[in-house]
Length: 303
View 1 (cartoon, rainbow, N blue to C red):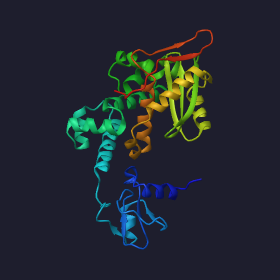
View 2 (cartoon, one colour; view 1 turned 60 degrees about the vertical axis):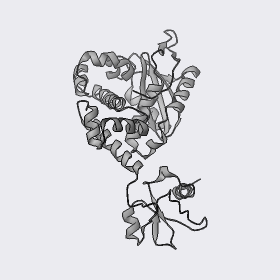
View 3 (cartoon, rainbow, N blue to C red; view 1 turned 30 degrees about the horizontal axis):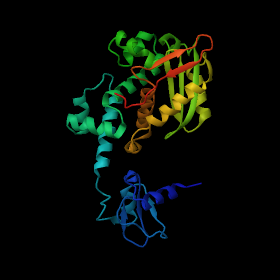
View 4 (spheres, rainbow, N blue to C red; view 1 turned 120 degrees about the vertical axis):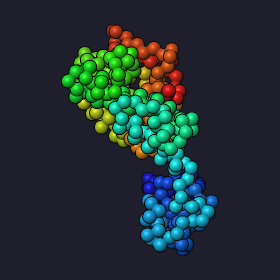
């Protein structure tokens, strides 16, 4: 079994730029610390000292390498920080922010921000806004006094706007979702993904849950807590195959691995939903067997 040190040593040996900013290293026989991608590769037999931050490295008596300049932000790190700032603005605002608002928060022009955001996440800013508002809606339905209250508390400006998209958000009627899936059949499939495991569940109107985590048992328990009154069963082979393909095609760009786990989770869940949705895709249920069939699901970038 590989250790964290093994993974970081491999990143250094491969000069993996994706690891830049996640840790720094130094060779005990030198007086400098480096980025994992530094062109100065350490001797294969020399052990490495690993530091999580530049502050730790300098406190240990090392100075920054003059080649890779680990004490200065790279373009990738600046892009990551800008995207995270924009995501936090989206998550913390009740009303959807404009593209100009997000670009200002990121410190970029409108066009450059949109391009950077999509390159890092595989989503447009609008799709991330949609994902966050949909997450709020599902949470509000379980605690609001009424469906109408949940709609406005989640940030929808009108009932009509919500009901037009409710099948994509809930996969069932709002009343059924609010009642824990009462009277609904839910079919679920679990498969591996870049964040551990993904559980995808569908009801009569579409996908009703996309859950991510490291433990399958925990995901199954969470699904049961969401829908305690639904008839939950394993998916058919047809549905499972569609989900497996969607999971493969929905993985975000490698750049997304630098984002915080909660942001990565929102991105991956939204991309999975988008991969199972297409203009010509139909989601049907066999009334006799309750079998869900997702036909012609085509993966693609959300937004």
